Amino acid sequence: MARDGALYVCQSCGGVQAKWAGQCTACGAWNTLVEEATVARPPGALAPARTSRKAAGLNFETLDVETPPPPRIITGVSEFDRVCGGGVVPGSAMLLHGDPGVGKSTLLLQVAAQASLHGARVAYVSGEEAIEQVRARAQRMGLANAAVKLAAETSLRIIIDGLKADAFDLVVIDSIQTMWSDQLEAAPGSVTQVRAAAGELVRLAKKKRVAVILVGHVTKDGQLAGPRVVEHMVDAVLSFEGERGYPFRILRGAKNRFGATDEIGVFEMGDSGLREVANPSALFLNDSGARAAGAAVFAGLEGSRPVLVEFQALVAPSAYGTPRRAVVGWDSGRLAMVLAVLEARCGLGLGDKDVYLNVAGGLRITEPAADLAAAAALASSALDQPLPQDCVVFGEVSLSGDVRPVSRMEGRLKEAAKLGFGSALAPRLADEAGIMQVFGVTRLAEAIDRIGRGDWT
Image (cartoon, rainbow, N blue to C red; front, side, top):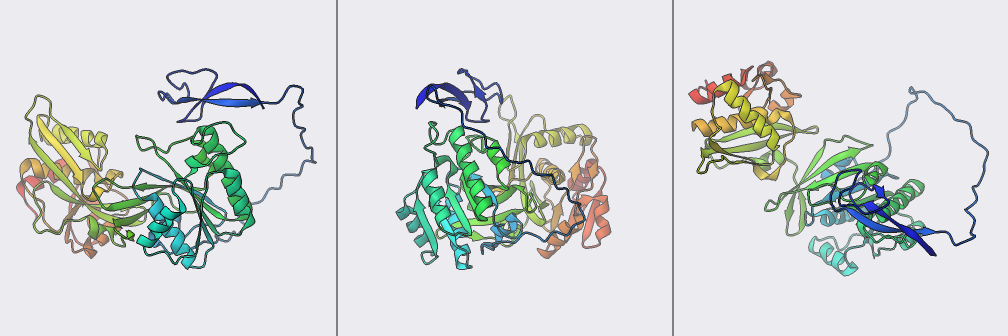
């Protein structure tokens, strides 16, 4: 084949440019343009003829036709099935991504083995490890007897032909960045190769009615590597999260065409693989005794599951001219907003103090209902007044200092009561549930005043 020239493709967004530049004009990322060759037809060769066929009529249907729910493949890993919406749908394509070493391969090997034990025909194709490495991991996890067919291959043509020749219910591809097609001159892992490999595997999933799970790499800032078009091609995008130093892992659904997108699955990493955690609230709470100043238990909500987690705050005099602000597990911008409201609406001056905020257990909280818990933990540390041992906190704080109601307050209180909590610092409307004693507040200043006085009667 004759080489016609080269194009420069952004490895972050997939944008194409005719010449190299330091910054991609499509997404603004720096140093992401990589040269990828284009192949021209030989001189005198004709363009491929277009096949003409008679245009088919467009058939419209109404919305009132009953459609049965899609069938599901139950993998046997209940936390994984929960995030998928009740199991894996045949003919669907899923993309799983996470930081290096978080346990993506361990999770999928466990899913593949458990699904095979439940009667599914499963294939595991590894492009990063040899068969001996995968087999050794399965033996450590006690899954050596699972009827999973293993293969170590990176050629897309060989993989597609092998999957077409046999009948499978579930196929795991680890990872999509290692797949390459001999019809493209681009290097493996490039945008062109990733897009082509993902497209072929998604078409195979739809045509053969086989569920395909693709493993994807992430960039240094935690975003999914490769072109964004891959996320649009698949039916579900799952992220596997976990802080280094913590054994807990969170499986979170970012996109799901067959289920909810805000469900989470909780796992604990051990020597023999991942262990499912049926009650995450008990896992993230500190049961060491009396609650210290600066700690507040937040009654959160992850999908349909109430989760209780402890917010830990430390307010200390600043030893330098510029006070420090450090936060782990929560949005730093949200922390800055809560600090501003505490100072402007509640008279709690923290501008000259070092402020540290941590969500215990490595869980990352994103819902606004955690505002009041963070504010209560900060005020408790600044005033050196601990909250009651049996008290949970939740509520959204506005810039005006109001405490707004949040969704499913009754479910949060029921989860807290189930774990032995007897009171709550929450929006005023929460006391209508009648589940426990609720110290209802409408303004953040009321909550800070109660914490400062230590009045919990």
